[in-house]
Length: 249
Length: 391
Image (cartoon, rainbow over all chains, first blue to last red; front, side, top):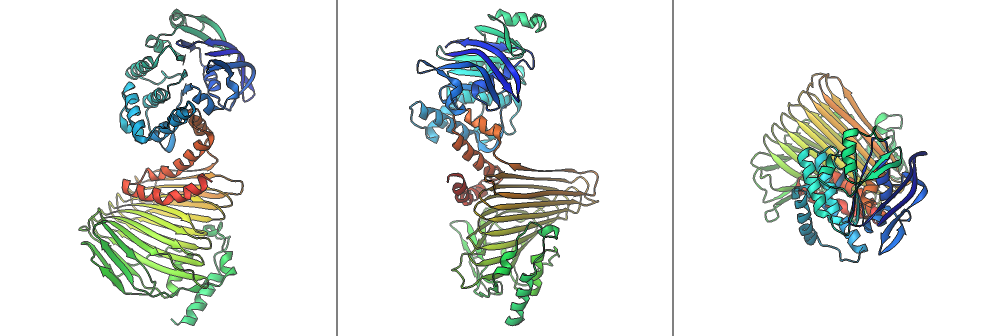
């Protein structure tokens, strides 16, 4: 579904990713772990198409209608419509835009592209109610401006709701576990597990092994200084937990 | 005062507006007073007030600056209109205040007491639509509104800046103890329609005002808002959203005086400025030496949509007390890149994301209003937002 080859990325003229190669298949869960500054978040942003990140070398291909397509040629909104999703480490607050309008507009943009009819307020309200239940959030959150005044946990849950509404095929979760207490972590993990199917894939970008107790990955990669230095199964995460990154680098 | 001397008084006044060397007027372009001869509007129809019970609405129309006559129909309990026993008006030191003393004017006073049904909506038409005058007119009007102890009033002011008119309006609100005023100031206008409004709020102990200014159209508009927080726990909130295009000029000057302790003020002004339009925000908060434990906040956000759009912003705090909470800030810029990317990364097109963010700018003010005022505010703003956002 996703094939990254020898990816080099610069931000503000500084090379942050120095040759990443990674293949993600439908139905898989990957975890990318690494110390601060290793380039984990950069990878997520590049996948989503953030304009501040410059790809200087390498390719990213993504499967669209059973054909591999150059992801880097697509605008951020085109990527989202083709089923790419990024759950932000720091979700953005948008004063004056209600969560409901935001989600409905996003849903209809993606639905239209995929050939479905736009949802009315009523239809969308019903759909949303089901998605809210996944992360046990109250409907009142939908009337509030996007992420404004939300606690850290509420912001992260709001990302999961967006993911549930848009049903992406490939989701990058950028440090979704950071800032969550244990209860919220369970709710969020449970939400992600509910959304797993044979057709979609998840990439969990995380600092700690903790999240991986709840969402079991098929593959674990260790990122250090812009490169994947080690890949393995779920046991690699446990190994990291006991030995630390220092033991590997 | 006879007509000849009135005309020469007005002429003399308009030919000598404050210059750019005066701090309060340094951004203000007055050349239109020199280019056109303005004559004093002498319309003298009766004023009127009518209660529409079914719509739970009272419409009060100020037709003439001179008439003492009021046609009152079926006024509800708790509202009285009089031209006697006026409140003493403070000297605010503004240019346009001065002309009130020099030109003939009759003030009326609306008095609300605690028996007034707070679920009624008061629509105060300060100046309505008129057929186009043959020559440029200067309209000079003034009104006082008193909220007696524990009165609770929702009031919408409506002003229309007709083509070829300059509407000079002075509105004074006196809030007695424990009274509450929710005010929406709606100003609409045409090209070549201009006006200056000076609003004064005197706030006694535990009284509260929320004044929201919505400006839609018109060529040139200045709003001076003064609040004097005179009693403990008095609260003033000034909000405003303006969407400007073409060569429109909108100028907000505010003065909030914390005269005693434990008083609160909050100001939030947003401008979306397109084409060659020009907006000014000059917000001033004074916290006097005895006004301990007061809090003041002022914020001005501006969105510039074209190269020639202009904003002059100057939030100011003067603090003489030492135990207060105060903050102020201003932002000027294009749409926020992070917000834009966030929306796009959810599949929303760039154009649509931009229009959502612009509407969000205005909605940020709407979200702070009661649901009734929010509805009216968004309805009034919709035309202005649409013209700028969807063109």
